[in-house]
Image 1 (tube, helix red, strand yellow):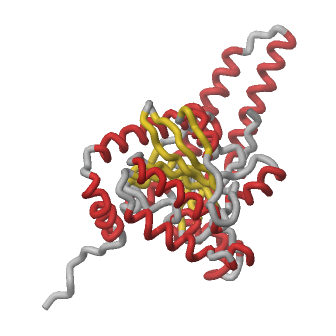
Image 2 (image 1 turned 180 degrees about the vertical axis):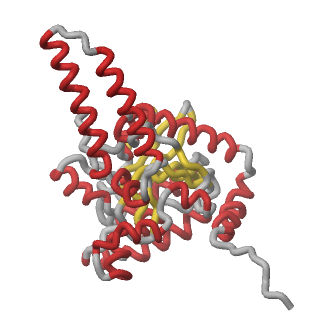
Image 3 (image 1 turned 90 degrees about the horizontal axis):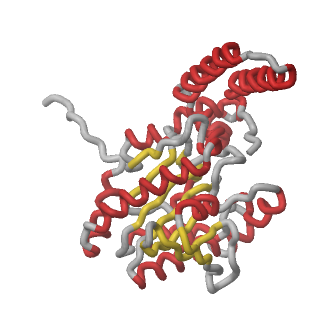
Length: 323
């Protein structure tokens, strides 16, 4: 797989190209350059360890948006079996920006739903770049209610810049569709897990994210607004996106420390795009572990625990002023 390199990966890419040239030279001329290549490979590993362990928030944003990062259907193919996609909101049309249907996870029937982006321009236009219309959220809610009816867990995979803000979407009730999902997801009487696999943008992400457990991949982001949007509003210039990304506390580590999410799922060195199978394996392990824990909770307690979880977010504990 040809992996496009991001700005902060230029040094790594240059060293990889140098190693490849030496290997080709050695093969072409029958030379023994094992020791020279070994030194460079050791330097490359050190460069990767240092580079990827000290990423800035805006670097994480670039990785979350990486065009070769696995999307929802890629995870469904690798983590689940017997997937049957279901279509339509039974009101207007099918929205390809959200996919969902029945599947099995280690033999257990689950409903899996997620945002879906495209790999090329034609597919991106069909998927609307992963930005759902209201009918997409209504389809998702229809599938969630179907899962609740039959008593099966719900897993959502979040990866969207945000809900589509077009005139047609607003005319068909975009805000109402999102708000209804938030309310109804809080009431579901089956175990629910959401995973931010890439971008978690604003209400468009939260409409699939009111769940018992919220997980995030190491290089994903989750925020009320994009760094570019925040910079345009507060700093009046896109040049401040680095500062905005830091201020938004949108990385997985930030949100884990704030207790907004429950677990950070580790990615391969360099990001999920470097090894789809290993990343899918980490997701499968996390889902099975959390589902096992949620199965032990009585169904009548799920909604009250879910409510308590969200009410606890942002709670402030401190010492008042001295008397």
